[in-house]
Image (cartoon, protein in one colour):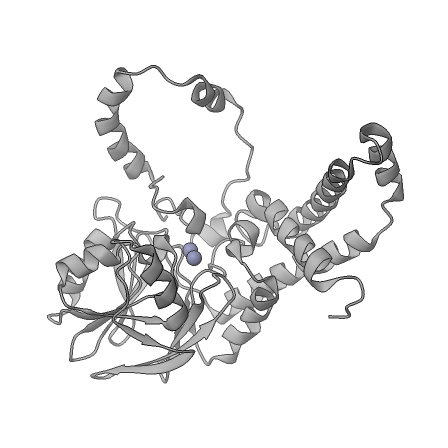
Length: 362
Ligand SMILES: [Zn+2]
Ligand SMILES: [Zn+2]
């Protein structure tokens, strides 16, 4: 069983694993002893926690076990193509005969990456590619550069422009950039990289190894759970809905989606696509249904002029209805449906109400 895989983007660099909590607690103990707990944190700790469903055993059994004492696992996916994971995050590295190309450096295990590469090959890291700009996937870049001075850092133009404005030492500014797409070659490796916009505004990457049937595309799904909060934090749901068909257009049998331990299959992609469409379609129906009774009730309670309160009541009702339907249909098929279904319904509702509109037949 994988160690904690809490992971995704908005969790960022916080380590919630059992080991992480234990490690964090020791140096903080003295500091805590010197100060009284804040009343708000005490209240939060005493608040009852939600009763989320346990992980589904058949899905969890597919997870690759990561030795918590080692903190990472390296597996050869195809000849010369390796995945490294800590159970929560994934990155990829490829040996080429002319140096290793590393794709992403999550800070959760970045300190182990150079060692993991050294255990696998005599080649040293020559290039680091950023899949997108989020700190939780590339925020170990500074550590990789410190351990491997002078390496080439590659990113699409949008990501490079964003990072050049950040002055973030954990995400060094790329030294090689490209616009839209490029085929990156080094030694025996050929990686075709194409920009997409399903997740982060500066751009995401489809990273495809032709002839090897390996595809890396980060932060739209994983092979064990529903997408993370808000359909994996997408800033463009129109692009997000389309990304699953874009993935399936590639001739791959292994997808590295950036999260959890084991990579995904084509069937995993189809299953998550079905889930996402099953979130979107009911929200459209629910939004178009008759809400006059609820609106009247809200207007009586808050006053007809209190339009924000009335809008909030309507949205909460729509989201709760959609979430209940989704939970009823998907709890036995994917993990964490009850954790994120309401956030997915909210994203779908916002997309339908503000982006698509009732006049659209899309
Ligand atoms: Zn992520
Ligand atoms: Zn991300």
